[in-house]
Length: 125
Image (tube, rainbow, N blue to C red):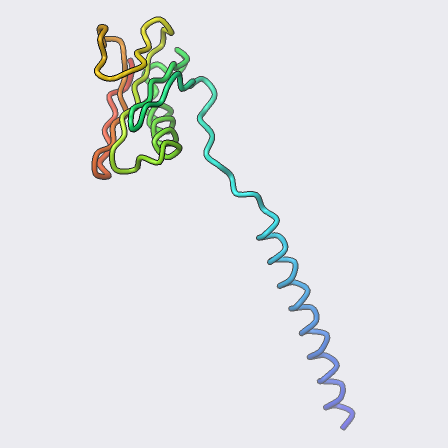
């Protein structure tokens, strides 16, 4: 009977340890703040109008397809436009358009485009 009682005590210790670990994991899970995607520094949304966003981009990202794609993806996610979204990038504030259709020359711009889940980036170079 002594061995059986000893086994019961060990099982109780193990169960309390498991409960403690489980409690800690659940507490950790619920205390974590959900991270909202943040537009990378160097990208400033001048205006968003429905699925269209007009963005001023720091020149250090010139030709950086990875960062332009990342910024475009985050902006489209923030605009809640996963099926159709257009993000236009400019480096000079005076060139940034703020409405569609664009009325001024658009030669010095990049475009991040989503249509039906397909992504296309024409990077600003």
